[in-house]
Length: 422
Ligand code: EPZ
Image 1 (tube, protein in one colour):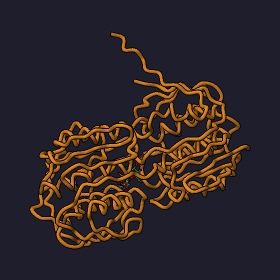
Image 2 (cartoon, rainbow, N blue to C red):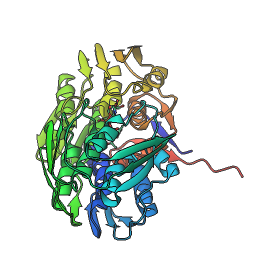
Image 3 (cartoon, rainbow, N blue to C red):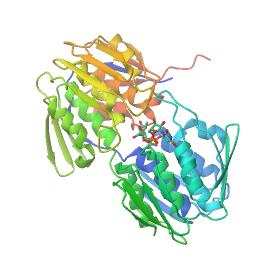
Image 4 (tube, rainbow, N blue to C red):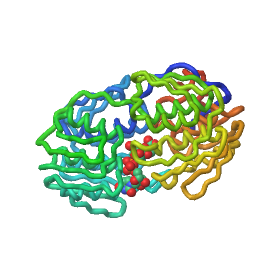
């Protein structure tokens, strides 16, 4: 398994262009099944998760090419409505193929995606939403069989603003008969991008970005060409890395409005941030200040996907900070690894109490999930000495060649691929 080897202690500096958003591209790729023909998507990042989604779409009969950041997807030949279990297990968010497959074929079979390192990852809200649209759902062991002769619009209230459930319902309702409203909908920018894509195909959806989304079903949709929004979590990760290494970095191709909660936290920590259109400049010459209390919550509040990264900055801040994780029950696994690098963190239930230390020290650490892995890379960049990050396939799921991106900013980081001893 590949590893990253990092020589820490060098401030990041330079300019980086941010990749397209993984969490927008994945549902939009699934939504392409709602129309017959060739869809072209620009600014799709080159990631393991994108590869898995494209392989699933090929298994369903689509033709798909991904070159130079552009995906060309021909769904004309899609004829299979069942998602192979092995592929579903590779990426749990393939669950939002259910909505498009159900709308296209009238039936689908998927598998319980199962939990992962960060939590149980339930899908009850997805299933309840599809049932409200008229789907009959049967669970046989870990198989989920879903049928609907005709999907009909409904008023759906989500007990929690689930991103995936909001997306699944939007996609199924786009071709349903009549009006669907989703109240307490998720408001993430990726939901807004999905609405933009579906409406570019001829759907009639309003309200994405607010807590109430209205979908008026149409008879059919038409393939289109669409550009994916920038990845706010990758941008936020780079911003924190710049601050944690006391560097000076310029990010291009961002949407600062998607990062307002992080920008607020970083400014409270004393990080200089200048915004100019789609450019964000980040600088931190002195030791950052502690931030009294940060609580992860659904967008537009502070995102769970940036919690582990900001924790690294706080381990080096002057004072005590409190970070509370309210979205996923297992998303503090990076604390143990950071403690092995010299961080002073105490966990009580879902809250981390972080007392800043003068420095971190390099160590061999293990990535347990995508964003925890990214946090350990930031810690290695800021630490004194050498850090080896193992299990970096987790990181490759969401960051395009992270070592190349960071090397461009002056980081001393390289990927080590062990030679198999045959
Ligand atoms: C999306 O996951 C993102 N993934 C996650 O990013 C992100 O952390 C999460 O939204 C929250 O912002 C993609 O978009 C591919 P949820 P999703 O449904 O849709 C509970 C990353 O690092 N829940 O909003 O799975 C669930 O257990 C990934 O890029 C139910 O109880 O998130 C969790 O505690 C990690 N029942 C909470 O809601 C359901 O039916 C948030 O889940 C669905 C969810």
